[in-house]
Length: 586
Image (tube, rainbow, N blue to C red; front, side, top):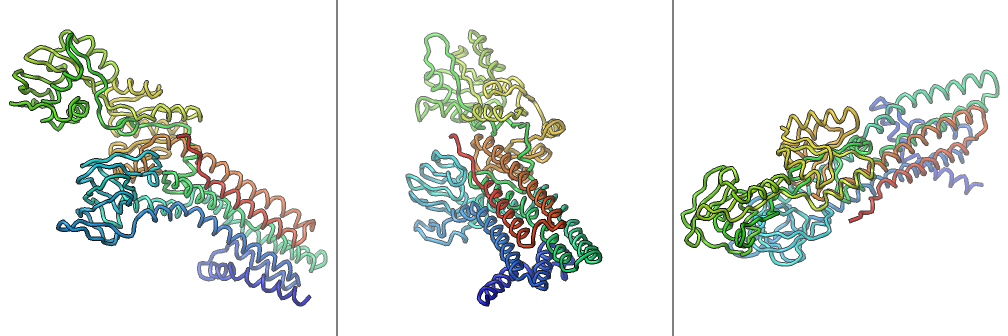
């Protein structure tokens, strides 16, 4: 008996040490009542009545529940720690032709880094020389290495897979795209969602209410019956009505879910944003740079009789290599020869086109509004009907061909829209581009609701209207999307290294550009939303069932303690399920 009693006291004191100091500090310093105070009063009262075993069980099991909650928080932050570990300790800087290793945290913008195969990039930069492929899977979730060449931006945490690269840093080692993502996750874990605040609102009056109920049971019962019996029941009521399960029901789920989302490339800024994300029934996409690659490509070439497509492209490239226009870049990429023929006497007419002499002939390249398509008029009309920008190529006034250029849809756009429709989510396209191009691309993507030629304020107004009928998410990546992102139920920025204005205005940021993250993120949020509902419902049901049983004496002190704390363990375990990430289909 003595050994058992000593063990009970040890369990009581060890368990109480984890919550009693905090409860007393909250009461006397912050002048607030808390769940820990209920546990403290219950444990002290049980000891005074001689229920040392029950007091030990109460303190020990409550301490275990608190420890499990802490463990849940730590586990949910695993994704954040893994992001931090993506930054290497050192980087190799090229100074005066010699390579010098320096601590990554000491890097500044403007330095020249040498990134060897197999090494991880310590900060953001732009490729200065060399061509290679970077593995960005740990950051963006994209499984295929991304080819990079001089002029391409590269992000911290990427792994070089093949050739040596020289990279000019554009950010400090302690302030880059990766640390920005970590900061966003930290913000998300620090801010509670609406339901978490609901739990707080329920618990705030519930704690004094429970104290008053227990006091009433003890006083009134003692006046009408055996004081010891009713004081014991009052303590049982105190434990039975404690909202400790309610207090941890939502935060554990939200933090677990946000941590899980960060591991597959979706950064959610707050618990409130996560909960709203789980209610989305309508998605509005920006077109340029979100649904499309934001890189115009040659998609069709029509030639006059007797000419080949490559001949027309080669002549156009010879002139366009002297232009910085995005359409010129598209023609150069499509050119059949890496080095186009040299054109002389090149002149550019802004908004119209260019001319130059190639192989003794005057080559003119420009808009159908400047160069009449002649025999290719029908072909040009057909190309423009599909949303393509058409460039006419002529030699000495004779039309040789027409080149169709379009900012093509991302390869996964149609699959993403189809997946959203399968989830019962309506999809719209919002764009500032012309209606013809917008409708052509929307048809390819499977989007029926198209709104074109919009200004930023028009996008914001439409998104607000959508949100009146159904919770709406706005997906964008540019500065002109910022007002709509801020006004949506949930704003989602594609590419966490894109427009700062878009990221700041958004509630959610996808670290990569693969649109297939979106249906996965929405499914993940809906799952978390269901778990939150389950946990809140179970927490309230426990209180509703245990209190009457405690008042009537059906349940003993030990039984209430056991049921209540086991229920907490169940709620924590259920909340941890929200950390599981969806199995990607791609």
